[in-house]
Length: 465
Image 1: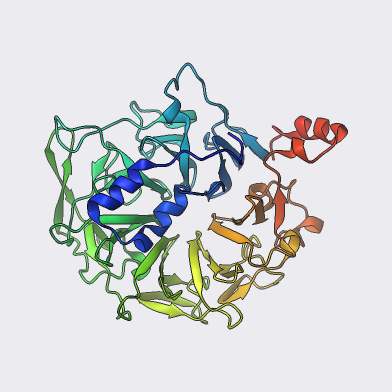
Image 2: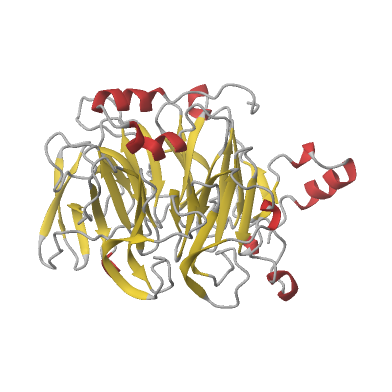
């Protein structure tokens, strides 16, 4: 499908909004991921790989040791390479219309137009939700279906996110499903997260996946947290007790499983202790990373909490843990946030002026700054690089484990950080000096280079890095 052709609408999202009478702003991230009324691609970053969705095409590049690139191999890919889909396996056209992507450390998920999830990569602890005991899946495979009740319809989804070793998804009924054991609990068969401290009638409208914790935004402007609670990243009012037990319900056979709660982890969604917000200043986006959590309000305020050992909280100091959401002061030249992305140990923010500011670890130059220091703890603008002249033209930013990716309004992709993750050649001391500079990557290089360059590109396309 070309970029000038209409994009398939995700009707499930519209139905979801009407059913739960959700404030549109609170579904901002869901709608952005689903590309409602836009022709721009969607992207996601894993620990060392990147996935970009453009039209009906999926491109991946970076490390592929667990099959996370979906190329039927475990080889790496230097340049963006199109993922192939076997028409004999995927006969339903709707199953090949993609509306969103998500990446875990070494697995990739695609949300289809009919609300199903397709995945590939590591499945060592069930994060791909596929039938059988495959430890890795190297080509796109649908997650197994499950039902909320024995005779009910198969569960469908409107958002998918991925943590280090798990996948989470928001259902059309406002519930949250988790696949894999990445939050220190066995949910590998596709369990629905129980309501925990959520009130009757309260539904989830957005989810955000950290490395081993999950944030849930509800239609009542409240955030709940579940999973590993190290470094105060859950900011939950209810603290975990080491010997307490919780129950999770298997929706397929109505079997109740008792799970012992480990110290520092929360098994049911616990209410996050939020600061007092001005009336009408609703939360429009939530985000989670390695050990940090964040949210953005409709007024453009950014709040963060959790670990700041690498400066990833942006509060002007290196903090071991911060248990209360704290407002982050962005640069005076661009003080209002539109979107925040959290990586393993760094954070990136897209502002209302179309600028990207970062803070946190700079070990791989993933902060986009020409600094010799290992980390920064205050928000600062990234270097221009090939983004020169793109002021007010940036649409989205995402963080991986060792790199950062940016999209502009034309759908062009820019990356900086570890060259293995950014479509660059092997690491070298000379080239390392420019790893912080954003570089444009062509998804369809055939449209921009001559025949000689095209031949060279095709020769190196599947080279390993």
